[in-house]
Amino acid sequence: MNAYKMVDLILGKQKQTFIGNGQKEAKFKTFPLALQQIIRSYCQKGGNLMLSGAYLASDLCDGEKALLEDRQFVENVLKLKFRTSKASVNGNVIVINSPNKYFLKSEISYFDQPNDTSYFVESPDAIEPIGEGGFSICRYAENKISAAVAYSGQNKICAFGFPFETIESQDDRNKLMESVLSFFNSTETK
Image 1 (cartoon, helix red, strand yellow):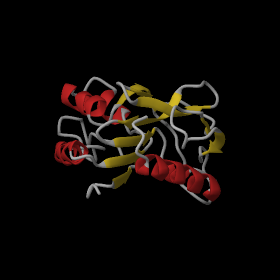
Image 2 (cartoon, rainbow, N blue to C red; image 1 turned 135 degrees about the vertical axis):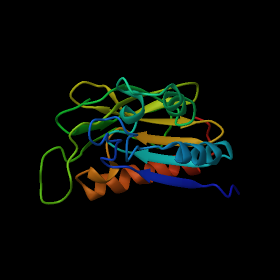
Image 3 (cartoon, rainbow, N blue to C red; image 1 turned 60 degrees about the horizontal axis):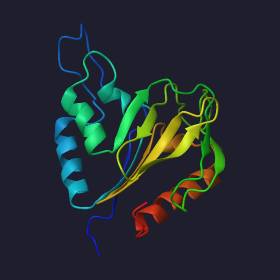
């Protein structure tokens, strides 16, 4: 049995912020270089990874200060491609039928407005699968842009362009997490 089973990185609204006039290095980057190196090593050893967050890919790939090394990390290690930020405004996601039997079609909603239960998502990322073994598992309902992707190869990855913990229904969170864990525990490569 693989000692590297699963790591869950839930980033929420974390993103790099430039303080003052922007001349200093950004603070609060989603994946600083040291964390990138740890994740890369973990994945190379067969570790499964679930990640979610509103700025999951845009923080590293969008804008004029985006670094080539960061884009390469997103594409080569996280196995996803950044498409756009502000991908949805209504908080509705469709879990689509995928090549993997564990992700079954359903509809879920995440908090997209101020409320008494959870923080809300203002700018979810659209992310696309990349490479052989990658596929979309969720799309934003309003425009069908990919909201979540999975990858199955030497390790397995599930990435959500919105924070997982903002899913409104506890039952929906449980079902989706069950799908992710079943996918990670399966021996299928896709």
